Length: 212
View 1 (cartoon, rainbow, N blue to C red):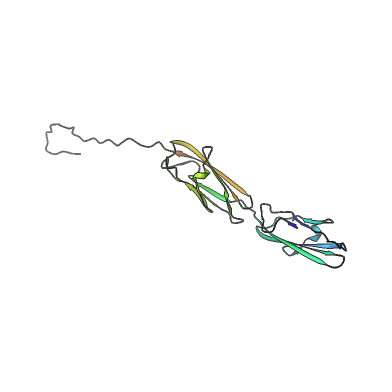
View 2: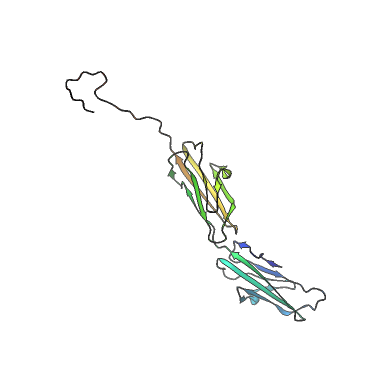
């Protein structure tokens, strides 16, 4: 058996790799110095901790983002060998995330669309992790969530004044990004413009010309 599991997305750049092994009955027992470990094809046996039933290795330097393969080979005293390998993905960065309206913005009206855009070049976005709060309340079910963003247009309109919203998103390795932005909904202008037309209605003019 091996950990991490094959195909796993990891948020750590120095993951511990562990292989467990045994020699089935009838057993000749494991040979001395019979365990060999490779990481991405490089022998790391000397850096591993090897016991009677397992071998563990933690990289001394950060692994690059992407796929990595660890392999263990075990040999018993009769010369029989078994090899196991595991491939996992190291995700070195959290998702990017931008909000519109952004912090400090004054929107056009209370029905302005709220839009979050996110991306992750590593393991990808976990869309099930997306959570949105507006003025402290969970409004996630109101948002249309996709692999690249989430949007919502408040059909009833937000009240005039200050509002705050927060978006949280994880990638498939579990790295999280959270952004909060405050914005202002202006008070609607409901006053019609006034028009003045000199001279006043019914006035007697001394000239035949009228100027507006």
